[in-house]
Amino acid sequence: MTHPLDAAHRHCQSLQDAVDHLRRHHLRRIAGWGAHLGAVLPVGGRLLAAGNGGSAAQAQHLTAELVGRYQHDRPAYSAISLHAETSSVTAIGNDYGFEQIYARQVAAHGRPGDVLLLMSTSGRSGNLLAAAETARAAGLRVWALTGPRPNPLAAAAEEAVCVESPSNATVQEAHLIAVHILCEHFDAVGSPAPTAPAAVARPVGRPV
Image 1 (spheres, rainbow, N blue to C red):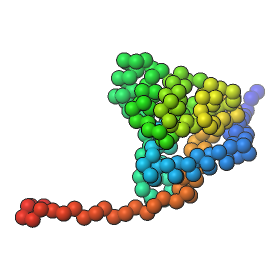
Image 2: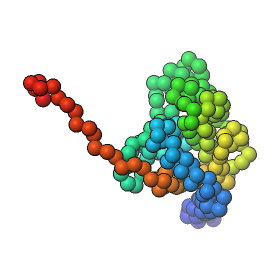
Image 3: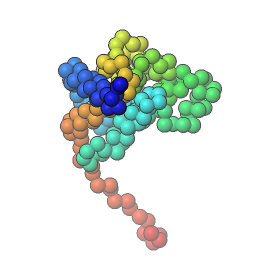
Image 4: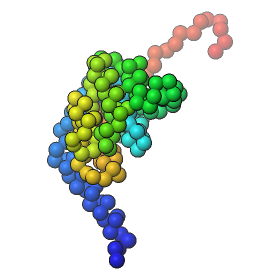
């Protein structure tokens, strides 16, 4: 008879194996991503992020850390989770089809030099592949966080971090670790201290 905790132990072992692979093979790349965003976002660049299902939640987690903060106070930076634009997603899906929900937003918001980060456990989502194609044509840098290689999204991206695990749950958990490492390196690059807002001149004689 299988012990009730056997599945839990297997889950933990799966995550441990995936994190060990991430540490041995991908830390330099993730650190490089954080450093690149640390150079691009403070001068007006933008991060666009997208995923489906749990990967959409991971993408939104990342953008929240950049618009808000990770561990320490710093200026806010431009980072948009494309799935969270619900009116745009539903309008585009209705008019152009589900595979265009991200590509059309990339065409609208992306500028040369911006970064598009796509997250997928399978690396085979058509809407992410379409977004990658649109982004590269528009001059954006495309990164992918996926499950095991080979997969089409890793091939379509300029750079990819591929978590080697057969478990989608483990892949998503490892993606969250990668997101936090990226944020740590983003902060380590150093951000300018926020400046006090300039005083606003008020017309004489008007009530305040």
